Image 1 (cartoon, rainbow, N blue to C red):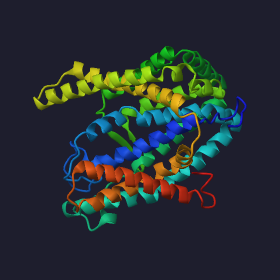
Image 2 (cartoon, rainbow, N blue to C red; image 1 turned 45 degrees about the vertical axis):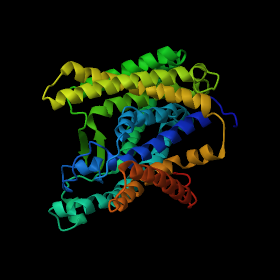
Image 3 (cartoon, rainbow, N blue to C red; image 1 turned 180 degrees about the vertical axis):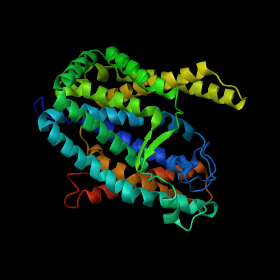
Length: 399
């Protein structure tokens, strides 16, 4: 890998491989939701938007996928914001606020417009077909028009990241010393893993808990195609700007994910720590579920569950950074291709996964078999389509 100056974006196989792994987890997450044990009945294709989270509901359920869904939900989208933040500082320094903002619009804004305008309706059409008999509408277009909003599917991540990036560019232009101070704080945190994780946890808890105490954690705010999970806006912002702090000017990023660095040397310990904290979080979820089934409400258990979810997210994210540092710093053909196509996979996978789930409704098979088929086929088809799109003129620079 060629050397780069401290002001250039320090692309590393480790960090790019982690981003690619998260993309696979996103596809897997959406692939198994149709077979989620606690998925609600299909209902109607209307403004309640339950179908937005579960576009296809299969009668075949897969025991155990709830743990994958719970694990993913505790960290994976937040960590994607942190990874984006890691490269924001070097890009700002190299391109300037204006150049950075323009680049972010091309890479995030244009794909969001296409995803929301074309890919999302294509993805949600099977959801309408499954619910057509229960939906008082003349057809899909009529039902879509009556929603009052424009669901964008996983593209919500693009516009939220674009908004955070625009804020970072504004700060760089108007208050450059603020970002420099943030970078110094990040350098202090990065010096010791315990300090890195401790500050991470405190920031995440402070960003998440005050909001989730007032807003239902499943609530989404929306303005036209602009959707975001209300309780997690602050959490995502905290992860993004913590990433900006840790990666400011690119200093120390390679050391952070070096195989012989502080995280890489103790990567096994971080995996154990992440597992233990996640088990604790799952235990509180189970206790809360039992109490809810009895009609009981416990503020203490609810707060404990929220805090442990936040702690689990930070520790799991650290464990994955440590794993990437130790195991994914070396090139090979599989990971090189996955890294190149990860963004494209993220953009196109949703429609592919939902159409696969819809196609399997007519077949009688165990839910776990269906979930695995959709997961594997969804990844393979999305990967192939992303690679094909990158060969088209003009798209390679975006994807």
